[in-house]
Length: 168
Image (cartoon, rainbow, N blue to C red; front, side, top):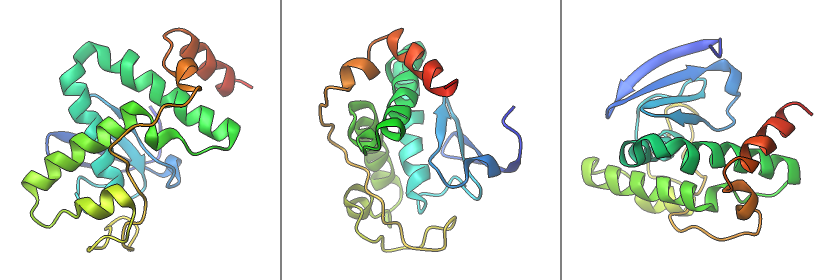
């Protein structure tokens, strides 16, 4: 559907699809499927995968309600940040919740998972297999309220906003 699939990997109950179309700009999760940039694999040493796995855990918990509560607001938030040149996406409740769930999951299952670097963005103790560098992006586990949350989380309006930004 999205084309240019580089690789398909499976781990921790998630199917990870690597695509050249993402150009290293984040990822998208629906159910147990993670679509991400070229080279992404089901590996806890890649903190982008870890965060997206948190969305897999949310999807299992929220079921049908994942799409209106997390999926659609997440796309709207990503578009909002890009349109307004702000960096609020990772601190929205649904993103922080995904990061917290993933940090808890991998901390229990992978003894060398570096929770501190995952949350704070300090250099990880290991090399990210996708980038070849130590992870340096933060994944906050506590959300922050912003007035734009009212638009992003309002059902229907957020869908119109997404469609408007995609076709303008």
